[in-house]
Length: 108
Image: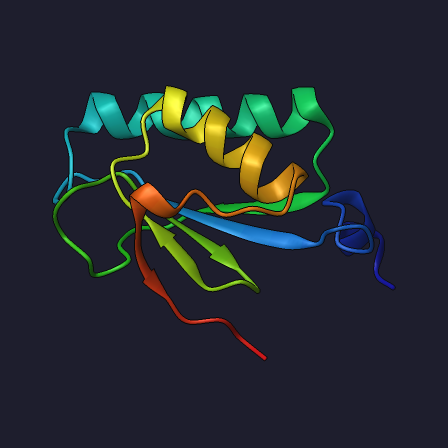
């Protein structure tokens, strides 16, 4: 495997998180805050996941939007506080947070 792929944690990753930080679905400050929080918390918690800041996930409204693959779960209104709960319950415990899910489309 290429060294650059190893350096981003690809061999260990179990999930890939895409966060759309706006500006169409939320304010730029809100989106930036959520993105920075996601990066920080993934590292602090040692969660083996890849993360990508998406330019647009084409679901404009109720953002920031978080999409988690391979589960194909789409979450709305991802504030830093909500991100903490999704990381703990969905990624660590394996239980998606149903109250913020707007769609499910797993890749299999």
